[in-house]
Amino acid sequence: MKPNTQTAMQVLIEQVRGAVPFDMPEAEICTGKCVGCPKKLLEFLDQELSDWEGRLEYDELPRLGDITRLAKTSKKVHKALAKNGLV
Image 1: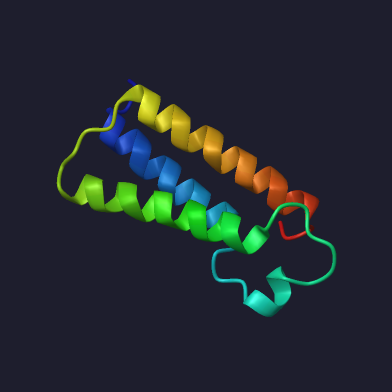
Image 2 (image 1 turned 120 degrees about the vertical axis):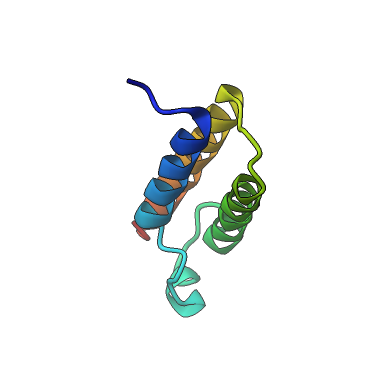
């Protein structure tokens, strides 16, 4: 049985928070050559996740497109972080 969209979004948020180093010190993030700005990407993604966490707390039901969009954004940020050697 497939989870409802609220559960799927919660699982996605947990997976992203576990895979992306949000707690990494800025001194480690901003070293050497950057491909994109990892600090800004982390801030952006953290804001997106926090926004959805708040919306879920107020029982907002995400649509499938919302989940897909957040997953796609997360993959792009993760890929950029990998190019910078942060994941």
